Image (tube, rainbow over all chains, first blue to last red; front, side):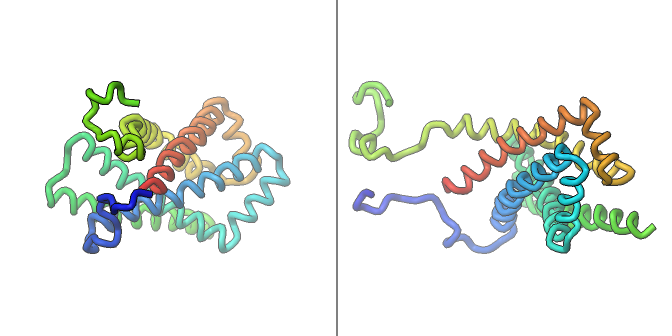
Length: 130
Length: 95
């Protein structure tokens, strides 16, 4: 390690808490959560390939309270990461940098992902009862 | 490693200590965007397919995945997801 302190990138400790950096952090957190969801997806696909018994065992895991909580959490994580990801792609294309579109699209990503998650699981819940 | 010392703007000491960018930033950035764009239709296809299935019992799911296009897309989904996840977690850890 060099003896002299090198300049570092702005890091978490010095930022004022505001919507922009909170959403960026949430994007990364949901991304890491979704990387774990990939493990679950593989487990589920392999259980299908494994036959009726392994599928039943996997279905039981996903239907457990912890499994359901994970699925609901992953639904939100996916919807948020998707909407916020589109936001990032639009920035990359050069759109939406001004304060208004930045904040509006940010809130759209948060509220939209919560709304879609509630809709999906509401539909599933309603379908189960009928 | 960067040609003649007279052509490089980096100090010899900086080069020896290996400071500065890792030089593969652009490739990483592009790969992340391309896999992200590919994942938009793939993940939505997967989600809507699951929601559209009449049930999630073994026979239904098996029949769905046995359809060649579904099987192919599912494998593609896992592959691109793995690549995008790898790029993303590396970025989080690097920072």
